[in-house]
Length: 188
Length: 188
Image (tube, rainbow over all chains, first blue to last red; front, side):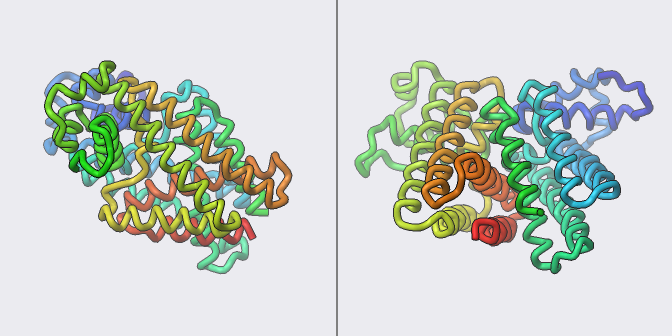
């Protein structure tokens, strides 16, 4: 991945970390792998991330969480909750298929990361909370009582995250599609 | 963990692998860690698992999948689908709380493992499929058409797996409890 296309070298390294985390997890991704993937000069990674892998993993998880939050906000700005869930399922189905089931959610990878990167795990928790809150607000705006909207948003986020890992293990998007159908029945 | 209590040394190593995978993931668990955790003599691990880590990870994932399948069969033998889902949520809530949110589902860890252990990932896919099928059969016995039962079973498995990783990242079982409440509303 080149560092052209308007991203800073730091952002290019974060995007490389996100890609590698989503493919092989945080523990199996070394700083050396991130440098090689991003095409950045060796040594520059410590300039941008003096805290090393723990800092890189935290910032990459935060960036991945923000990117997904933006997608969630976008689909909810242009559709009702049912249409929004449908669009999110379609997005992830494309990610799975294009990556031949070797890529998933980088935030989930951070959630399951080890004690080597505790701040990345915390950033994953913040990201999940942000997505849930955005969904809960849309569901409440749509007429659902607030406590029910919160539970339903938790179900949507967890079901999609779980379906991603089940689909990866089974190497088909059928579980994700089944979860999408059943979520839509639940929402309507 | 001792190798007494009726387990063979091989089973003790598998249980150690399951415990370590569920805590830190597959990539961050070395054969050396498993030997140390199980208290087995160094070198004996290659006697039991000549294929090394890939074989150990595959067999451990299969064992963890079978243990969970037995739990699913047990709760479904003693309750209707609603009661069964409730019991599964309670089980995982206890696991999270007792492990201070440092333990989760070992099969999920295998699902997200890297190319180092492809057979473990496949074993995770088989395990998820087995759990879904058992739940789908119970839901069909309860009167749901087969295609609907399959979708609903996929939602239950994915939602619980996703809730486990969200709960770990947030270090509270609140997401798992919210998902449990919403699943029960969906089931009734």
